[in-house]
Image 1 (spheres, helix red, strand yellow):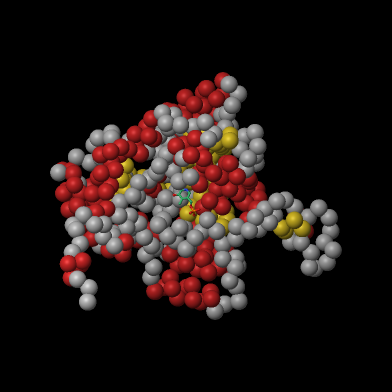
Image 2 (cartoon, protein in one colour):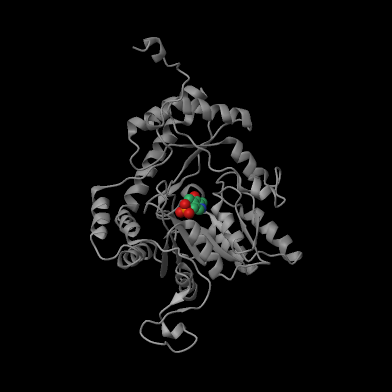
Amino acid sequence: MKSSAARVIPAADPPAADTMIPYGRQSISEADIRAVVEVLRSPWLTQGPTAERFEQAITGYCQARHAVAVNSATSALHIACLALGIGPGDTVWTSPVTFVASANCALYCGAAIDFVDIDPLTANVDPDALEEKLFHAHASGQLPRALIAVHLAGLSCDMKSIHQLCRKYDVAIIEDASHAIGAYYDGAPVGSCRYSDITVFSFHPVKIITSGEGGMALSNDAELARKMRLLRSHCITRDEAQMTHEADGPWYYQQIGLGFNYRMTDIQAALGLSQSHRIDEFVAARNALARRYHASLAGTGLSLPVTGLDTPQLRSALHLYVVRIHEDDAEAHRSAFEALRARGIGVNVHYIPVHLQPYFRNMGFGPGDYPNAERYYRQALSLPLYADLTESQQDQVINALHEVFS
Ligand SMILES: *Cc1c(COP(=O)(O)O)cnc(C)c1O
């Protein structure tokens, strides 16, 4: 027999991963499971009728004309850039506080990437910084082809100001709304593309709704949508109107450009379509939990996030609830993170500024380039937030925060 003394676990040991309350996770219903099983019993597994129905459900929800379902938001961002004609010699701008995919999509096209610093209050791209940078870029003949506006944590950027500035300098706009399906801005759903050329959603399991992996690109421009549909599947067409010469026979197709296999399977689409019926339910649950955090964390000295009004005028999808520690101090940040993890709270940090990643430092970016983004990084902690988070789990999080920050 083993010695029982070996069973003593010091209090500081991190809890097993399965007892940790994660920062985000999916919510899968029996209806979701039935929808996926139904497709498995059908003749279509790859992109087919269910992917089309999923696209229609999302255009209906978002009040947009066209949608192209793909296998990830990363793929959607890539084909969005290509459809806009972005290539070598072009520059794309985005926020340094985002997932790397918002920047990588430009690099896939052979374009250069640059960043616009954030507004410290919302952590979204700062329209004043954008205005100044556009002014100087115009003066030196180095305007970007496109801006990728990231709706961090699910709160829309100031799209009216961004749209006005980008129109003035003829810069295209892609909304990276990976966090923001179900959000509203200026009385319209994010995804309506009222202030952009293309909007992209992610259906990764930590996002608002999931298809396992998946993404979608929305646009009101039929030509952009046509190009993205081609790019999704090798730029192969069976449409004679798009062919360079008459079909050889009924089997005939043509490859008219260089595309990819970015298709979403009908298995994924079935899950996404089923989940899409609960967008409002999920976002309402996230908003209710955020209000509880707000009310309970007032005494901690933490800065609480700007989360919109939870009205159709301005509603955040609340993908993330990001608090900021009081000190601007990397050491205090790390020890707060560790203290919360030791208490079973799966806090996370969104995001390591993209320009500080080694791959981007090799392009010449470095510390000091975007001071607001870098300060944000030294202070931000994402608390657990997802539709199925129970109030008693949330109370554990709140108690731990009071312990660590009192
Ligand atoms: C998750 C995410 C992506 C990438 O989404 P995938 O579907 O995983 O490719 C892109 N941008 C942002 C802001 C994200 O959070």
